[in-house]
Length: 274
Image 1 (cartoon, rainbow, N blue to C red):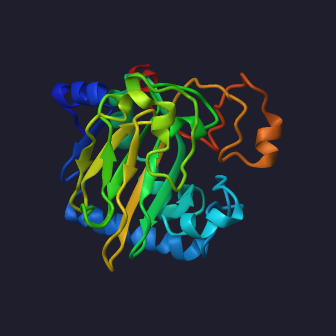
Image 2: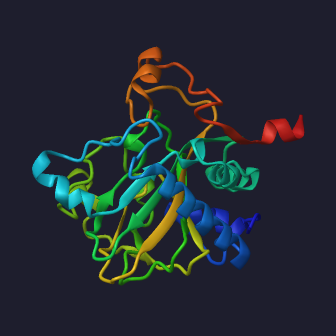
């Protein structure tokens, strides 16, 4: 696994709000990630979360068939699969995320397997952080390609620099590919940057970077394993998101999100230097 970043790469991420890293995993590591994901998906039997099927609201029933064919989304696989847990809790991932975000500590918010099936619908332009239970402009995600992500099968696209001017308003993910530009019209004429990746490559992106993905125009799958990272020290903003009803009821806005059983601290510069 690539475990070091150059100053140029860090500067590029902070300017553009995303960074693509080619050949992030070795061929052997890629096989390990693929095998772990296959096992975890089979165990879940279609459930999005360890404790429930649905997480995000996807609109009314008339939209259900459309969104069901955007991608299969399985969340917090680290919680119920030992192999995924070993991969996601790797301190090296946390260190990379912390370097890019410019923070001392990184917690897992949630992981996600995002699997575009053959002929899947596009993923409309959206932001990530406004969905989450904390509000931090530095939050970010890793997106690891487990199949080649191409123009034809649904590679990511980013609006460069958008994270510097977007906010926590959440227009959501709808059928209308460009709905987000009603909220952020200043980016409607900005040229997007495509991020095709070979299997084993990855990208990091800021949670306030506008991004989306193509439809899958092929008979094959486009599998990705992702993880959203929360800078340590964040507090509950009142949004349930992935939290269970019991956990959300226990919290009040302003409470720290520091439960290591739910959001493990996978990297801390302070611990290393203490």
